[in-house]
Image (tube, rainbow, N blue to C red):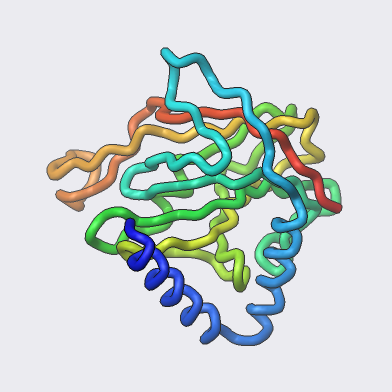
Length: 204
């Protein structure tokens, strides 16, 4: 995407945010402040012969989505978007996501194909995806726009250790697929496409 196109897309996203209710903007401001206060993490990726390495600032394709993970943060909550039990924690992937295709797509394709592990705790297998700007849930993407999103995972307790392994599945486009009524669908395969180990930043 060229600079002019990216700037135009970001302006459109900004206009969308400015049109949201004030309460949502305030909630989103808290989200943005919490995420911005944690610096970039390091990584130790897999061997070259394994999956593609996921690293801070490096684009990763998850089906039609170009995903850039800037950092990984642990928080006690991410109100108003996520309010877990006091004993639980929220692992947040601070991301920038661009839909590279030419048609709108549902956010579930992205949510279902990125996972975290390595903390010695149970991770909820139903992650959330929220706009950092206003803390509202992301449900679908429009082509060509770049969104800053928080991909969230609720854990059963505090993360053990200072690193988080992030994995993404291989997602393929199939014009014909017996598993879905949609003849043109993005389908996940049981195969790791990308993997990387990020330093975890903790916020209270």
